[in-house]
Image (tube, rainbow, N blue to C red):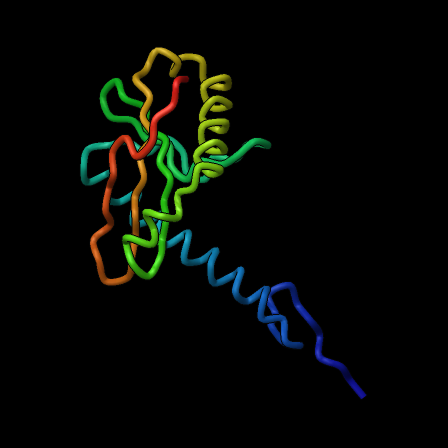
Length: 137
């Protein structure tokens, strides 16, 4: 008797949680791509995507003129739900990741820093919220 071989991407055996995580990951990548395209259309230059540190992650780091923008991308069924998904805890992690970026890129310290959010929902244009939250960096 042969048994089916389970692969890393296999959802056989009732592993619905893994399939859900993979779907969420793909949705996040798609939303980040839409957000990056929006920023490019608005004249920003994307300098990093999915910037990860041990203290947090920034979805997109972009620049326009002398402004360095750390962008959080949120994808939900409704734009209002996406807006509510940027919690204080996430803001702290994004700020910590931004501080790590600035430590690793000291030339950017002299830039004006801003924290934006881009909200993404199916069949809707992404909504770019400039200065979605502030900090005393």
